[in-house]
Length: 352
Image (cartoon, rainbow, N blue to C red):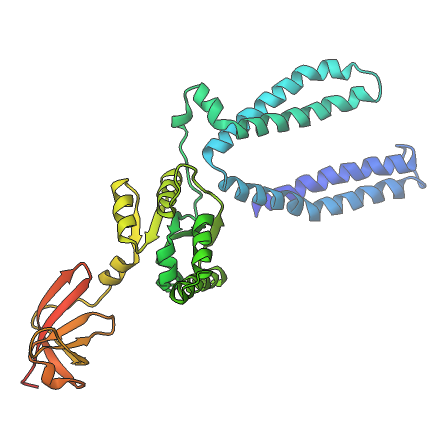
């Protein structure tokens, strides 16, 4: 509020002075008399009123826009642009005097044009060749790379073909647990399109489901997703390109591919595996706990029955075959964690 009030006072005085000067020009004299006073004072009043009402809007709106834009600029770019602008203005200052000695109309105009042109060129050249300049002076590694602050701050998450076709990524992303920007490289999109155009009906349906999942993610307002054209030239296979791109951009990879998972881990890349996430959020049961289960099929061993929890966890019930297609109360005896997921062994609770 104090800043707005100060701006209003400054704007009132400044615009009032401009109005006074315009009034003098219109009246053709600085003498105040009955014929010129209304013109001069009227122009002064109009200028003061405009300054009072327009100053905060003319100054604060551009200032807020500039502040928000600067928050998105990396520290290295900001420093490079400032140095380039300063050097450009110094060169323009050296040329100001000789340019001002040129005949009309060049003398008054060219110095100002030189300031604008050299300032822009200096900032643009330093921004484009920032790494080269800083490497030349040996200070490239001293510039911290600071990510933008705020709710938009997030990591880049590369999506693999397998996780797109799987489809669960859409539901997970909508929950807000993936604090990052989902990134789909063009070569992954091309592979999906190739699968969707396959002559094999199963592969074709899988590819089309993957494209539908991407369309669902793109239309979800709570999901940040982008498609990039980056295509590493040091690899030919899609998995190799994903690994190379993740290393270049310091990104994580979301995948269900076991082999890609192992290869990426060996190279220090962060992997988010949907299957591991699904296993991690399944119900945790301890030996001795009781739960209702419906026996839907026979087990591999004699007398065993098999049922499933709501999250898909298999429950093997000893002596449960006799209860086929029935829901009974069972008691957990053992819980095993396998590569395929969690496996629960139980026995019927005869007391029930």
